[in-house]
Length: 373
Image (cartoon, rainbow, N blue to C red; front, side, top):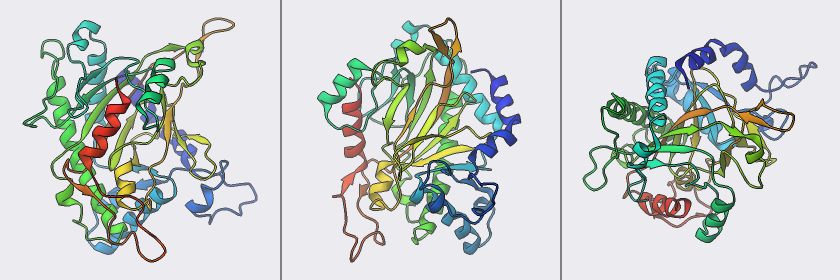
């Protein structure tokens, strides 16, 4: 993706913003509808847009709580939010997209030397067709899905760089100038934002603001650069084929940075229909993952989502080509050895604990082992 397309997207903010607002009939009787009301119908479904500067600049707990309650409500009702005024500059994000694009343009023989090879490490280059994301936990079923309809994308997986056991797989500086430092800086930036959002979640869940602090401080995260090459629409019509199949994420939060092409769809938890998560300039799409949902006893939703092909460019009477797409996902995780067991105020009489305790490493490595081959 070229930087120009990012800038065009951000200049068109007024159009994209309207797409995120709830539908209001001309009769004007739904102006006071709550998010819980809106998401029960596909015609009014919306992902809430939250001004995070109100939390970042708040000087009192009561001020923080207003934004914290909005975030928790968004994760309760939808599982997704748009985070606006989050503190990461356009310049930084543009630079990361640029370096990501440069990496994926490298020759295949250069990228293949960095191949992903261990679910415990979860680092390296994943070529097109190697991954098949799905909700299934059955390795045989996933293998059959992958053989029939692999996800049409490639990715580069990056973890904490100081890990004593698992090392990142970096291209040579001559092949990808400034790639390593750009991604390391961005990894740290995203971790810091994730920490602040988790403080907001703690407040919104009536916990101490620093409740999660010592459970997420080891930066056991994954920065994923994603490239969706152009593809003929005929290939995407195959049974089960998608750019990325329907799935939930594994960790606490995902910070998703989209380009202008779009294609992300979120399942309405009530109707089970998929709805577009239209890119909104300057925002980050943030969703709750499986471990956060387990932690909260499903008070917070880990919602299914997928990536589908945007409108194709017609190349013949019967065929078209979808445009290339880029995105960057920062998968936020608790510390590897953190025990994920039900939060103290998310169970009680009439609300039993749904899940046995599990460590972050046990859960994520198990899911990754089944997803790749």
